[in-house]
Image 1 (cartoon, rainbow, N blue to C red):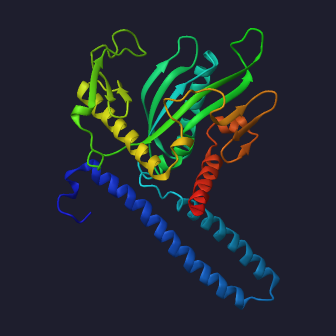
Image 2 (image 1 turned 30 degrees about the horizontal axis):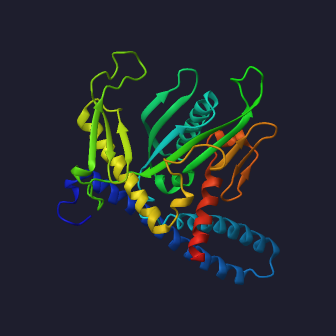
Image 3 (image 1 turned 180 degrees about the horizontal axis):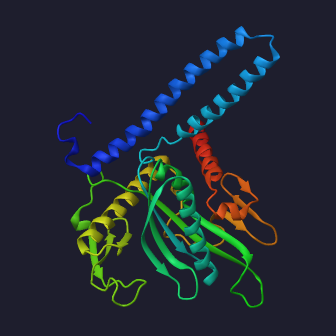
Length: 330
């Protein structure tokens, strides 16, 4: 931050400040815990044999333990992109109208989680389904460890319920794919050559009538070496849509590089894979019983409505701890 010209690039500067705030809080919290634990140990020696005082010390120790466990969880966010904003893509898969309805349910779930976690969000793209729900959506999340927390959600999600769209009232299984990438600043080391890009513009119309966003401002970019395709239509100008699409492309390339380094490509959701049975990471069962189960970690919660209302932290934490365990085994 003391470098000359630090504030010349506002976006880069804000990213550095974001990392500083996180690092400073962790260091200060650790120092505070250490000092309080030393004081508590000294006090314990002084009041030994006094049941009431010992009870009070045990209560304070429980509080310190809870704070330490929260700090321990923060230490799991060690990835190079964990502090960056996250861009999530929600894509309806097999299951017809139930799948598009489920996609909208998941979009609401992540928005509710963001609101409870004080994470800012912005819907960048949304394609509604004619009958119900959405075909796909792209949402940007910005806040504390946004990517570090949301990367646990990458994969196929499955819903089992009595279908409200089935006249016979039969049980229906539907699938939705979730993809999450970090938002990469322009000055990062990921190089994208113009010759590797195919850029198309098209006319995009959204909700609100035929006169809304009817100019040829929407942009679709294909990265020829990898086959990755990104698009953006939420901005009014073609220039801004192109810039945003390039950010998304950089994020996806960054995630590919991260997956290659950690050798986890096989376990992560691949947009080329089928969003269908056999590939799900988590199942939300509404009938004949209620249960949300993560198949990677075994984490479960019988309060399905609570989960769909955004109670996701236990699933995210379980995944992070399992990933840390894999790293220890390596």
